[in-house]
Image 1 (tube, rainbow, N blue to C red):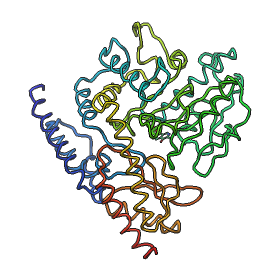
Image 2 (tube, helix red, strand yellow):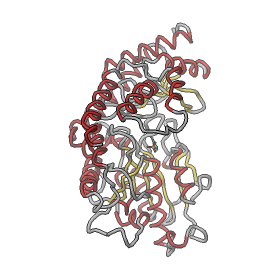
Image 3 (cartoon, rainbow, N blue to C red):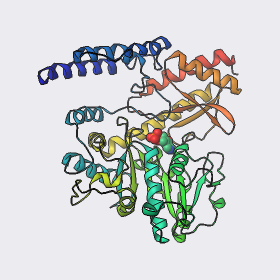
Image 4 (tube, rainbow, N blue to C red):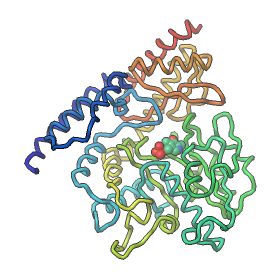
Length: 457
Ligand SMILES: *Cc1c(COP(=O)(O)O)cnc(C)c1O
């Protein structure tokens, strides 16, 4: 078996390199015929072995054309970043290592790289030194972990052990969210037994920011959920005043900072965070703006003991080591080694490279907004970060324009609703995007939209 590996892996590298080299010229959304062709990967269960090189060849021939080219430079949907070269390469090496990241003893290198990556992220984002963290699939799970730590801690302070005794009969926890809360946070509340509908929703302003004067009275049984980076507008909740009030009341503050929290690495954009670093827990996506491969998120909690209390389990055969055993900080036990790519991304970019990535994408979002506004289309958000919301007239015209942009294939942008109005949402979040890609994409969008709306001025 091992003698086929060198040739197989070399061929894989060749195929992957070719795929990525062609990514700038590919139709960004796969063509319907290529999506239909994916059925050819199925059929009856293979009854006999196939040579791995043939398996790979089939996967490339049928699978690659069925991809959305989100690794390429002109994908602007869903705040999806690409994969940095060092992060992708580290992912391959880690695949060869096939480490189980659950325990120090099952993978010393994974455990060490997680320790280092956690420290680096905490330092880069200006979070409290000594914070703890768990490496999870993404911000959905990071929200779940942060809120679990909040639930455990506040109930334990009230004399209730939620891990042992469950939520029934426990003291009532109050949860406060903004009207623009991300759906994943509500899902986490639902899973935790805190309920997605029993929250208090605070009215937000025209950019989706919580209006701090409307935050109700807080107490030591309250979890306040703030957002650093609205998924539509990119706007930040005004954290400073709300967190000061929460601290005084003994409440817990959780920040969903999926992509926006990375603004902390730029002196120009960090002021938007307005003290979000003073919270108790943060949900962070690494597969978005840090540009590491999926799945990669991080839950950071100010006091590691609080996350540990919510996530740790024990069994006699699972040896307990000194220091941080990763599985005490995550819902999962066996899992892949997520710290590897985060370590590689930060090691290769350095603080300056990461700052450059964030600032370049924000400048490119401005460039998009300027081009579209100059063509006569309405930009519906203040472009404070990497997000642009544009309307092409009526909701029907906007929806038609989005479908036509996706079908054209020069670039890909998704649709959303903003204050009851259909919008196209542009998220610039990839290292691979150049200014020329933005110009090419803006020109395509304008050309396509004008075919639908007619001349705008
Ligand atoms: C993307 C995003 C999420 C969900 O993150 P996943 O990584 O997809 O689980 C949550 N909150 C915000 C603000 C996001 O942008």
